[in-house]
Figure 1 (cartoon, rainbow, N blue to C red):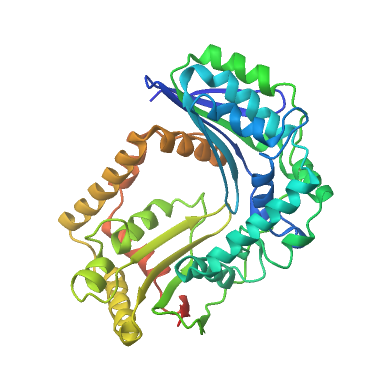
Figure 2 (figure 1 turned 60 degrees about the vertical axis):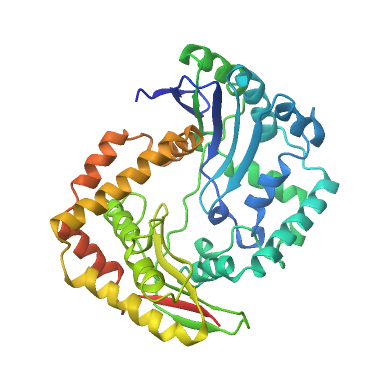
Length: 406
């Protein structure tokens, strides 16, 4: 893959991968998320993601929405703990159309008062919908438990207490201080020559005011394992076990990704899926997750089950943890595990939108993008001893926290 790069004087970076598809995918990544909020701003990053589509100095909400939809394009956005992304898929001839719209909504949004109040209600409804879904709420509550009293633990959506109090001035202040141009990346995968894309990039983003980051994120420390049970009166019991994990720059993160996949990745033959679902029928949904952040990370295993099977499920899970900690995987088993995750990655990048999102995130965080061949080699180089060492650290029962909704 031949990635191409360009940087504007104001610090905004561009990464491009040419493709032969008639459909292009493009997105602006901002290295700002919910962890960058002050305590009285909880939910502002996500609210801004909603409001940038509600009006600019030259467009009303309808004209923003119709600009790409009129030509069959799809515009979307998301907010995480550490980033915000506005992206679109469209026919390749509409690059200029999208880039002009993108620069307008990111740098010229007016945040109309009426729209602010409407979107607050929309987000409050979104929060309520999470509260009605324990399988989703438990993840937010577990991160809050692990990253106690730290911005990483707060829900991306915000809170019912803080959200109504957010003001228009706070929105402008957050954009000015946290939407830093040297923390922005425009990622593109599409059938357009790089010189032409640079010309459009320069045309639409070069004159945007330079805003350099002058703050550092507050690191998290002081993790203490905590076991917690909450009465929820749900039909099933929802359970999460997990631990603090490696950050985005830790060389062991690939090993932990492999361990996570082995335990309860998307494959039906994952160890916990076989133990809890296939062999005993105790649980319909079993999954493990690893989310690395700039200076920390979190690993978790989630499953739901009927009340009478809770102890048996936890016992089976702990048994699988002990196997990963005590017994080195055989060569054939390890090879299959590596082939599985490599295959999953290969399928993922066949989707050009996924590839664009991956490129943008990688270039934003690392300032570079590893080729798939490099990533495959890193996976292939993992040894059974390394896997066992990581399992002993991450799955240490004395370090595990748990949250149970019952």
